[in-house]
Figure (cartoon, rainbow, N blue to C red):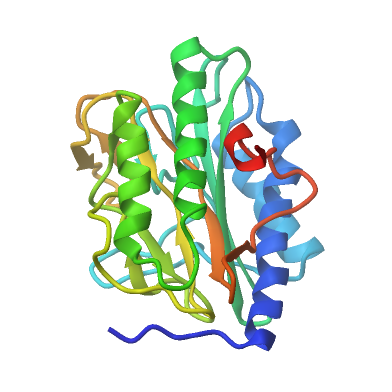
Length: 267
C-alpha cells in the first residue's frame, strides 16, 4: 500500500478545496426544506461550484472501474439511502433526512465533506440518529495523531455507535484523498485497537461513518450507485477531510457555517 504524504504546500491547497466544499453546504442549507427536489439542490451546487468558486464538482462523470459514470455533481442520500444517492425529481418532505455529500476540485486538489439535514420537522428518532452519527465522526477524529493506528479510529467509532444501539456500515469507508479523489489508506469505521496502518504527519484522509438505525446489512439499487439499508431503516452519515499534523490533526473541511462541535469536544 502506497500512502502519499502531503507537503505543507499541498495541505495549503487542500485547505482551500476543503473550505470550498464546506461552503457549498453552507450555501445549500437554507434551501433544504419541504418541496425542494434533490435535482434542484444539485443544480444550485453545480452552478455555485463552477461559476462562483471556479472549481470542479468531482462526482460528475466520476467512473471507478465497473461503474457507469456518476451523473450528478453531488450525492443526496434520503432516509434509508446510505450513500451515493443520485439527485432526482422527488420533492423532499417534512420529516425526511438527507445526507448531502460534496467534493470539489480546486487547482487539482480535492476537498470532500458531507452533512446531514433534517427537512422540516424531524422525528425524535431521526434527530437522535443524525446527532449520534455526528458524534461518532468526532469520536474518530478525536483519535487522530501520529503513532495512532487506523484500527484505533474504527474501534472508537464502532464502540460508541453500537453502545447507542445503532449499527455501522462495513462495506464503505473513509479514504485517502489529495490530487486523486480516492487514495490509500482505507479508513474503516469499525475495527480493533492497535491494528492497521500507523498515522504519520502529512497523511490526509476522510472520516465518514455511515450509521444505520436498524441492522448494518446493505443492498445496491438498480441504478448501480445508490446504496440502501436492507431493512429500510434510516441511515445517516457525516464526513470531514482530516490531515495528520505533528501533534494531532487539523480538519480541512470547515467554513463559517460548519455545525458546532459536540459538547465532548469542547469540554
